[in-house]
Amino acid sequence: MGGCSAPNCSNSTNTGKQLFRFPKDPVRKKKWVMNSRRDFEPTPHSRLCQDHFEQSQFEEIARSSAGGKKLKPNAIPTLFSIGDPPYPAVTAPYILLPMKPEPVEKELNFGDHGYARRNPLTGLGEDTDRTDEDHQPCSHCQLLKKQLEEEMQHTARLQKEAEEMKKRLYRLDRIEKGLQNFLYEDQIRALSLTKRSRRAVWSPETILKAQKIRSAVGTKGYEFLRELGYPLPSYRTLCNRLETKIMVTTDMSCEMLAELGLGLMAPCDTPTEGVGDNDEEELMGVLS
Image 1 (tube, helix red, strand yellow):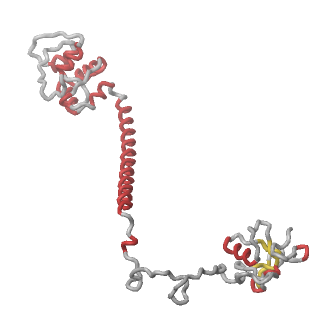
Image 2 (image 1 turned 60 degrees about the vertical axis):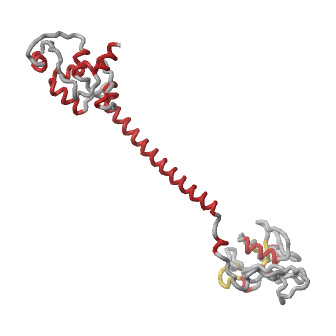
Image 3 (image 1 turned 90 degrees about the vertical axis):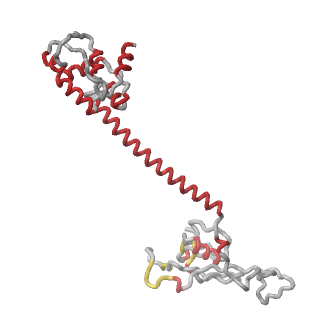
Protein backbone atom coordinates (compact mmCIF):
# COMPACT_ATOMS: atom_id res chain seq x y z
CA MET A 1 0.00 0.00 0.00
CA GLY A 2 1.24 3.51 -0.82
CA GLY A 3 2.10 6.22 1.60
CA CYS A 4 0.58 9.56 2.55
CA SER A 5 -0.24 11.97 -0.29
CA ALA A 6 0.45 15.11 1.77
CA PRO A 7 3.59 17.15 0.86
CA ASN A 8 6.65 16.65 3.07
CA CYS A 9 5.07 13.53 4.61
CA SER A 10 6.51 10.02 4.17
CA ASN A 11 4.25 8.15 6.59
CA SER A 12 2.80 4.82 5.54
CA THR A 13 1.42 1.66 7.06
CA ASN A 14 4.96 0.32 7.21
CA THR A 15 5.78 3.01 9.80
CA GLY A 16 2.68 2.14 11.83
CA LYS A 17 0.53 5.01 10.64
CA GLN A 18 -3.08 4.65 9.72
CA LEU A 19 -4.07 5.94 6.26
CA PHE A 20 -7.46 7.25 5.23
CA ARG A 21 -8.95 7.29 1.74
CA PHE A 22 -10.09 10.58 0.22
CA PRO A 23 -13.87 10.94 0.51
CA LYS A 24 -16.10 10.28 -2.48
CA ASP A 25 -18.20 13.34 -1.80
CA PRO A 26 -16.82 16.02 -4.21
CA VAL A 27 -17.25 18.86 -1.70
CA ARG A 28 -15.38 17.12 1.14
CA LYS A 29 -12.75 15.79 -1.26
CA LYS A 30 -12.09 19.33 -2.50
CA LYS A 31 -11.62 20.50 1.12
CA TRP A 32 -9.06 17.75 1.73
CA VAL A 33 -7.14 18.70 -1.43
CA MET A 34 -7.16 22.43 -0.59
CA ASN A 35 -5.94 21.85 2.97
CA SER A 36 -3.17 19.51 1.82
CA ARG A 37 -1.79 22.38 -0.34
CA ARG A 38 -1.56 20.23 -3.44
CA ASP A 39 -2.95 20.90 -6.88
CA PHE A 40 -3.88 17.38 -7.99
CA GLU A 41 -6.85 15.10 -8.52
CA PRO A 42 -6.90 12.28 -5.94
CA THR A 43 -7.10 8.75 -7.31
CA PRO A 44 -8.79 5.80 -5.60
CA HIS A 45 -5.34 4.94 -4.17
CA SER A 46 -4.63 8.40 -2.68
CA ARG A 47 -4.48 8.50 1.14
CA LEU A 48 -3.81 10.89 4.02
CA CYS A 49 -2.27 9.62 7.27
CA GLN A 50 -3.63 10.12 10.77
CA ASP A 51 -1.10 12.84 11.62
CA HIS A 52 -3.02 15.37 9.53
CA PHE A 53 -6.23 15.12 11.57
CA GLU A 54 -6.88 16.72 14.92
CA GLN A 55 -8.01 14.47 17.75
CA SER A 56 -11.48 15.99 17.58
CA GLN A 57 -11.92 14.60 14.06
CA PHE A 58 -11.92 10.98 15.31
CA GLU A 59 -14.75 9.03 16.84
CA GLU A 60 -14.31 8.64 20.58
CA ILE A 61 -15.61 5.09 20.88
CA ALA A 62 -16.16 3.66 17.41
CA ARG A 63 -13.29 1.78 15.80
CA SER A 64 -12.63 0.58 12.27
CA SER A 65 -12.87 -3.07 11.28
CA ALA A 66 -9.08 -3.37 11.62
CA GLY A 67 -9.19 -1.97 15.16
CA GLY A 68 -7.76 1.45 14.28
CA LYS A 69 -9.21 4.90 14.69
CA LYS A 70 -12.31 5.87 12.80
CA LEU A 71 -12.88 9.31 11.31
CA LYS A 72 -16.09 11.20 11.81
CA PRO A 73 -18.33 11.44 8.75
CA ASN A 74 -17.47 15.12 8.30
CA ALA A 75 -13.78 14.97 9.29
CA ILE A 76 -11.46 17.54 7.67
CA PRO A 77 -7.62 17.36 7.75
CA THR A 78 -6.01 20.56 9.05
CA LEU A 79 -2.50 19.57 10.27
CA PHE A 80 0.20 19.92 7.62
CA SER A 81 3.91 20.70 8.10
CA ILE A 82 4.38 23.33 5.41
CA GLY A 83 4.81 27.07 5.28
CA ASP A 84 2.09 29.62 5.79
CA PRO A 85 -0.66 28.93 3.29
CA PRO A 86 -1.93 31.69 1.07
CA TYR A 87 -5.31 31.27 2.77
CA PRO A 88 -6.48 29.65 6.04
CA ALA A 89 -7.19 25.95 6.23
CA VAL A 90 -10.79 24.84 5.81
CA THR A 91 -12.31 23.72 9.08
CA ALA A 92 -15.87 24.90 8.61
CA PRO A 93 -18.39 23.16 6.35
CA TYR A 94 -17.83 25.74 3.60
CA ILE A 95 -14.97 26.51 1.23
CA LEU A 96 -12.85 29.64 1.64
CA LEU A 97 -11.47 31.05 -1.58
CA PRO A 98 -8.67 33.65 -1.78
CA MET A 99 -9.83 37.17 -2.39
CA LYS A 100 -8.46 38.80 -5.53
CA PRO A 101 -7.46 42.46 -5.28
CA GLU A 102 -9.98 44.72 -6.89
CA PRO A 103 -8.74 47.27 -9.45
CA VAL A 104 -8.57 50.77 -8.02
CA GLU A 105 -10.88 53.16 -9.78
CA LYS A 106 -10.36 56.87 -9.84
CA GLU A 107 -12.76 59.47 -8.52
CA LEU A 108 -14.89 57.06 -6.57
CA ASN A 109 -17.07 58.72 -3.97
CA PHE A 110 -18.91 55.74 -2.66
CA GLY A 111 -17.11 55.26 0.64
CA ASP A 112 -15.29 52.02 1.35
CA HIS A 113 -17.27 49.98 -1.15
CA GLY A 114 -14.94 49.91 -4.10
CA TYR A 115 -17.04 47.32 -5.88
CA ALA A 116 -19.98 49.72 -6.21
CA ARG A 117 -20.96 50.89 -9.66
CA ARG A 118 -19.79 54.25 -10.94
CA ASN A 119 -23.33 55.27 -11.91
CA PRO A 120 -26.17 54.22 -9.60
CA LEU A 121 -29.21 52.59 -11.11
CA THR A 122 -32.02 54.88 -12.14
CA GLY A 123 -34.75 55.01 -9.51
CA LEU A 124 -32.75 52.89 -7.08
CA GLY A 125 -33.63 55.13 -4.15
CA GLU A 126 -37.29 55.37 -5.10
CA ASP A 127 -38.13 51.73 -5.67
CA THR A 128 -35.68 48.84 -5.38
CA ASP A 129 -38.17 46.17 -6.36
CA ARG A 130 -38.46 45.11 -9.96
CA THR A 131 -41.75 45.62 -11.65
CA ASP A 132 -43.93 42.76 -12.69
CA GLU A 133 -43.18 43.50 -16.32
CA ASP A 134 -39.59 42.25 -15.88
CA HIS A 135 -40.93 38.84 -14.91
CA GLN A 136 -43.60 38.55 -17.57
CA PRO A 137 -42.74 35.95 -20.23
CA CYS A 138 -42.73 36.70 -23.94
CA SER A 139 -46.23 36.91 -25.47
CA HIS A 140 -45.08 34.91 -28.50
CA CYS A 141 -43.80 32.15 -26.20
CA GLN A 142 -47.13 32.09 -24.39
CA LEU A 143 -48.97 31.75 -27.72
CA LEU A 144 -46.72 28.90 -28.84
CA LYS A 145 -47.15 27.18 -25.49
CA LYS A 146 -50.93 27.43 -25.78
CA GLN A 147 -50.86 26.06 -29.32
CA LEU A 148 -48.68 23.18 -28.18
CA GLU A 149 -51.12 22.30 -25.40
CA GLU A 150 -54.03 22.37 -27.85
CA GLU A 151 -52.18 20.13 -30.30
CA MET A 152 -51.33 17.69 -27.53
CA GLN A 153 -54.98 17.55 -26.45
CA HIS A 154 -56.06 17.05 -30.07
CA THR A 155 -53.51 14.24 -30.49
CA ALA A 156 -54.78 12.58 -27.33
CA ARG A 157 -58.37 12.73 -28.65
CA LEU A 158 -57.32 11.22 -31.98
CA GLN A 159 -55.48 8.41 -30.24
CA LYS A 160 -58.56 7.69 -28.14
CA GLU A 161 -60.80 7.67 -31.24
CA ALA A 162 -58.36 5.36 -33.01
CA GLU A 163 -58.52 2.90 -30.13
CA GLU A 164 -62.32 3.01 -30.16
CA MET A 165 -62.37 2.41 -33.92
CA LYS A 166 -60.05 -0.59 -33.54
CA LYS A 167 -62.40 -2.06 -30.92
CA ARG A 168 -65.42 -1.40 -33.12
CA LEU A 169 -63.74 -2.95 -36.17
CA TYR A 170 -62.90 -6.03 -34.12
CA ARG A 171 -66.53 -6.36 -33.00
CA LEU A 172 -67.81 -5.93 -36.57
CA ASP A 173 -65.40 -8.59 -37.79
CA ARG A 174 -66.70 -10.99 -35.14
CA ILE A 175 -70.29 -10.18 -36.13
CA GLU A 176 -69.55 -10.77 -39.83
CA LYS A 177 -67.98 -14.14 -39.07
CA GLY A 178 -71.08 -15.06 -37.06
CA LEU A 179 -73.42 -14.03 -39.90
CA GLN A 180 -71.51 -16.20 -42.35
CA ASN A 181 -72.73 -19.26 -40.46
CA PHE A 182 -76.32 -18.84 -41.77
CA LEU A 183 -76.21 -16.06 -44.43
CA TYR A 184 -74.65 -15.92 -47.87
CA GLU A 185 -72.32 -13.10 -48.90
CA ASP A 186 -75.01 -11.32 -50.94
CA GLN A 187 -77.33 -11.39 -47.93
CA ILE A 188 -74.61 -9.87 -45.72
CA ARG A 189 -74.05 -7.13 -48.31
CA ALA A 190 -77.79 -6.45 -48.42
CA LEU A 191 -77.78 -5.71 -44.67
CA SER A 192 -75.67 -2.61 -45.31
CA LEU A 193 -78.13 -1.15 -47.86
CA THR A 194 -80.99 1.17 -47.05
CA LYS A 195 -84.28 -0.66 -46.83
CA ARG A 196 -86.14 1.54 -49.30
CA SER A 197 -83.29 1.86 -51.81
CA ARG A 198 -81.75 -1.58 -52.02
CA ARG A 199 -79.77 -2.51 -55.10
CA ALA A 200 -78.99 -6.05 -54.08
CA VAL A 201 -78.14 -8.71 -56.65
CA TRP A 202 -79.21 -12.08 -55.31
CA SER A 203 -77.28 -15.27 -55.99
CA PRO A 204 -78.98 -18.52 -57.08
CA GLU A 205 -78.23 -20.02 -53.67
CA THR A 206 -80.10 -17.19 -51.96
CA ILE A 207 -83.06 -17.58 -54.36
CA LEU A 208 -83.31 -21.30 -53.51
CA LYS A 209 -83.10 -20.56 -49.79
CA ALA A 210 -85.78 -17.85 -50.15
CA GLN A 211 -88.03 -20.33 -52.01
CA LYS A 212 -87.71 -22.85 -49.16
CA ILE A 213 -88.46 -20.17 -46.56
CA ARG A 214 -91.45 -19.00 -48.65
CA SER A 215 -92.80 -22.54 -48.87
CA ALA A 216 -92.32 -23.07 -45.13
CA VAL A 217 -93.84 -19.89 -43.73
CA GLY A 218 -96.12 -18.70 -46.50
CA THR A 219 -96.38 -15.30 -48.14
CA LYS A 220 -97.34 -13.40 -45.01
CA GLY A 221 -94.62 -15.04 -42.97
CA TYR A 222 -92.12 -14.35 -45.76
CA GLU A 223 -93.03 -10.67 -45.89
CA PHE A 224 -92.96 -10.49 -42.10
CA LEU A 225 -89.38 -11.77 -42.08
CA ARG A 226 -88.42 -9.14 -44.65
CA GLU A 227 -90.06 -6.40 -42.59
CA LEU A 228 -87.99 -7.51 -39.59
CA GLY A 229 -84.86 -6.96 -41.67
CA TYR A 230 -83.98 -10.50 -42.71
CA PRO A 231 -82.07 -10.17 -46.01
CA LEU A 232 -84.35 -11.85 -48.57
CA PRO A 233 -85.36 -10.86 -52.10
CA SER A 234 -88.83 -9.43 -52.62
CA TYR A 235 -91.65 -11.77 -53.52
CA ARG A 236 -91.80 -10.36 -57.06
CA THR A 237 -88.06 -10.95 -57.51
CA LEU A 238 -88.48 -14.47 -56.18
CA CYS A 239 -91.24 -15.17 -58.71
CA ASN A 240 -89.20 -13.76 -61.59
CA ARG A 241 -86.04 -15.69 -60.70
CA LEU A 242 -87.55 -19.15 -60.35
CA GLU A 243 -86.39 -21.33 -63.19
CA THR A 244 -89.47 -23.58 -63.41
CA LYS A 245 -92.71 -21.66 -63.36
CA ILE A 246 -96.16 -22.99 -64.23
CA MET A 247 -98.58 -20.15 -64.50
CA VAL A 248 -102.24 -21.05 -63.88
CA THR A 249 -105.37 -19.00 -63.70
CA THR A 250 -107.23 -19.73 -60.53
CA ASP A 251 -109.05 -17.98 -57.77
CA MET A 252 -106.80 -19.63 -55.20
CA SER A 253 -104.27 -17.43 -53.51
CA CYS A 254 -100.52 -18.00 -53.64
CA GLU A 255 -100.58 -19.27 -50.06
CA MET A 256 -103.18 -21.91 -50.86
CA LEU A 257 -101.30 -23.10 -53.96
CA ALA A 258 -98.07 -23.30 -51.98
CA GLU A 259 -99.77 -25.38 -49.30
CA LEU A 260 -100.85 -27.90 -51.96
CA GLY A 261 -97.21 -28.62 -52.78
CA LEU A 262 -97.90 -29.14 -56.49
CA GLY A 263 -95.27 -26.75 -57.73
CA LEU A 264 -97.96 -24.43 -59.12
CA MET A 265 -97.80 -20.69 -58.78
CA ALA A 266 -100.45 -18.13 -59.55
CA PRO A 267 -99.56 -14.79 -61.19
CA CYS A 268 -97.95 -12.66 -58.53
CA ASP A 269 -100.09 -9.65 -57.69
CA THR A 270 -98.30 -8.79 -54.48
CA PRO A 271 -98.14 -4.98 -54.17
CA THR A 272 -94.72 -3.51 -54.54
CA GLU A 273 -95.28 -0.76 -51.99
CA GLY A 274 -93.52 -1.37 -48.72
CA VAL A 275 -91.48 -4.27 -50.08
CA GLY A 276 -88.19 -2.39 -49.89
CA ASP A 277 -86.42 -3.67 -53.04
CA ASN A 278 -86.02 -2.01 -56.41
CA ASP A 279 -87.29 -5.05 -58.26
CA GLU A 280 -87.20 -3.61 -61.76
CA GLU A 281 -83.52 -2.78 -61.48
CA GLU A 282 -82.82 -6.21 -59.98
CA LEU A 283 -84.56 -7.90 -62.86
CA MET A 284 -82.68 -5.78 -65.40
CA GLY A 285 -79.43 -6.65 -63.67
CA VAL A 286 -80.20 -10.36 -63.92
CA LEU A 287 -81.27 -10.23 -67.54
CA SER A 288 -78.19 -8.28 -68.55
